[in-house]
Image (cartoon, rainbow, N blue to C red; front, top):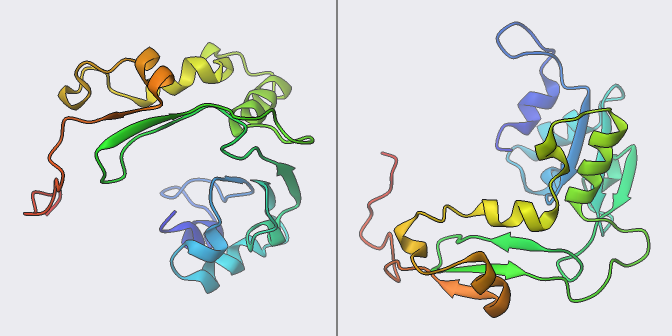
Length: 173
């Protein structure tokens, strides 16, 4: 995502790969949030780029879409949430049925796989099968936590220090 403008404007070559001709955007609004927004907007504005956006709002990125598909909100689909520098993991259980014609991203991707004639079993796993795979259950920080516990309780505290990186210790230089 941090180089999406460059990628969309690249003509394609042996080292880069083929020119990007089709793009599906979900869970993001790169025209508004990716670095070098002028370059990103120029990439999305290409007449030869077919862009599909899965969204529930008319975002800056959706303005460039050839097709907008209504995505579900967190109220409507199963999801797993790992830590973004906090000390909890969570399960998002649907609170309501999908509204209108909205579909979960995973459901849209399963439909695309079927329409494309793809057959790999992983492409057709249900959300209930996929969500637990977001976790490394052998991670000591998750000791004693199970998928069923998360679904029942909704969350679990990881066995981590409260201010994990307060003294540095990042994995990169």
